Image 1 (tube, rainbow, N blue to C red):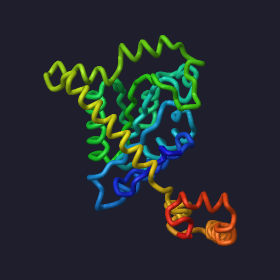
Image 2 (image 1 turned 180 degrees about the horizontal axis):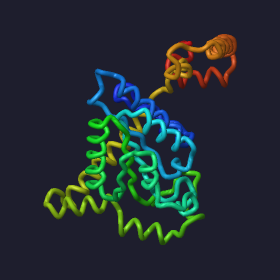
Image 3 (image 1 turned 45 degrees about the vertical axis):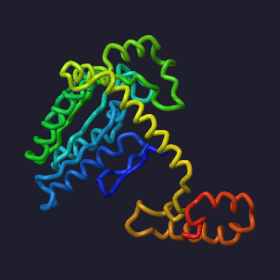
Length: 268
C-alpha cells in the first residue's frame, strides 16, 4: 500500500497491513535499545496502534514481552471508537485499553486525544519514564474517527451521519487548537487562510512532480527485507530476469510497461 513507508535514516520501521504485528516488534526494538550501551538512556521506541489492534493476540504478546524484558518503549493506542468498522462496545466490555496496562505492571495514562497539548504533555512524561526507568509505558488517547476507515469503507453503514457531523463541530481537535492559539493572539483567521492556500499549492505541486516520476527500478522488489537474499528469492529474481530478457523487447505489453520503470528493467 502507498502508506506503507519507512525510513532507515529516521528510524521509522515500515508499516505493515496485518493488525498488531508492530506491537511485539516494538518490544523487541526496546529490548535491543536496552542492551545497546551507545543508545541506552538516550533513545526510546514508540509504537502506534488503534483499539482494534488491541483486540489481537499480538497486543498481549507484545505487552507481556515488554513488561518482562524491559527497554524504553511507549505503546500509543489511538482509541477512535470504531477500529475498521467495529464499535468499541463490540470489542471489549472493560474500561478501554488503559485498564489493561496495570495488569502487565506497565505505567499507564489515558489522555484526551483531541487535545493536542494534553497529548504532547502525556507523551513527554511517558518518554521520560520509559528512558529513565528503561521500561514500557502505555498511553491511550481517546478520540473519534470522523472519516471513513478507507476508500472502501462506508462508515454510515454502522453509525449515524448526524453523529459524525456533531463530533466535527463539538470536539474537533484542529478547531480546539486553533481557538486556543487565537485566544493567545498567536494565530488569526488571516494566518489560517494564508497557510491553507500555501499548503494546497504545495500539495498539488508535489502531485504533479510525482506523476512525472518513473516507478522505482524492478530490483527494489527484492530489497529492504533481508540482509542476505534467501535462495528462493534469488531463484525468483533470476526467473524474472530470464523472462524480461526473453520477452521484454519483443512483447508489446511488456515493452510498454517496462518504460514506466527506472532503468526499464535493466537493473536486474
